[in-house]
Length: 113
Length: 111
Image (cartoon, rainbow over all chains, first blue to last red; front, side, top):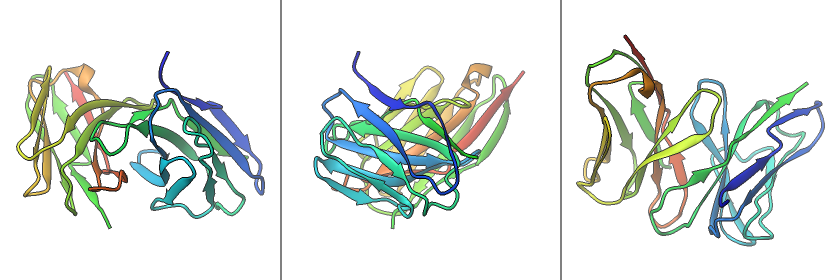
């Protein structure tokens, strides 16, 4: 089935550790996105990528890093520099440049313990 | 910087009533999207609005776009409990694919 897969669904991190969240899509989409959602809040853009080997910072990129080595994959690393990483992380993809909507994965809930 | 604001942030309404959610954005764009999110879940696409004057309808929901006023509305007709969710609008900055979401409107429909 075509879609966006995020893994893991739940992730626990100790303070000071880096963790990587996976996002894979088989929709042949060019654009991919990472958002953070805090309880009762909206979505804030962390990073986005329009094509392979290129990505741009969103509004809250500090403490996060990404790579886009393959069209279908856009992993997000939450580094120890991110002071408050506990949140719900959502990955999305879209065709890009065409005005079609973005499709979302099921999300990863990250908790710092 | 693109800002997207929704109001109200919270809406409690009785079944059978009508209401409108508003989405204002701060920069030029002719692409606006509406999404629904159920508690603890991901986002589901509802509408794609791509031009000034665009209107889309699905069931009890109708969305419209006025690019000159930088305003989109999501109108709810004869609300039912199943519509209870959080609704987000999102705007695509022209030529960039940068997709910015509004603050969300949490809708509760009660009998």
